[in-house]
Length: 122
Image (cartoon, rainbow, N blue to C red; front, side, top):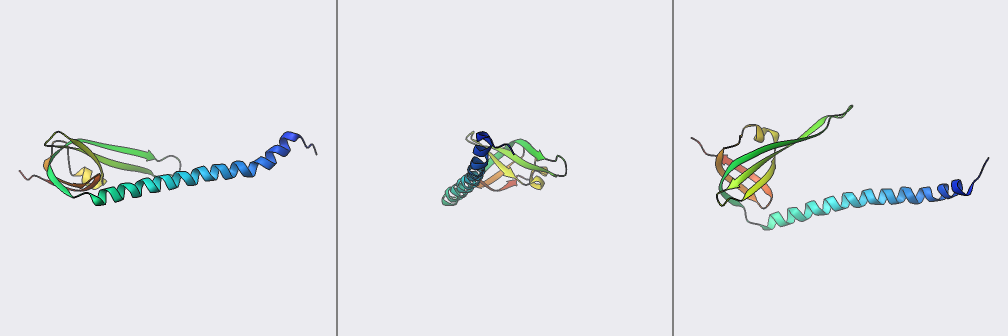
């Protein structure tokens, strides 16, 4: 069997390479978790606000769906407050389906956390 310096280097370096890739993946998961917890803590310290708003935009982001994977869709609504500030929130597909651009009502949120939208009855 041929034993070159390169092949012996690769066999000795392979465990290190696998460990480094594994560590990078774990660090990515930890970073996402810590960022999400930080946003949760920030939002929980803020007061709940209920203020007049209008839905000015709807969008959906779909990913996956290739091969045996099912597709996933996230729905977002953009609200404009009376002072001109615009805020986008992730909402359920059912909630997005029953609202349309131009709807006005009372938006309730806590920081970046969407709590609800009560549409004005005409």
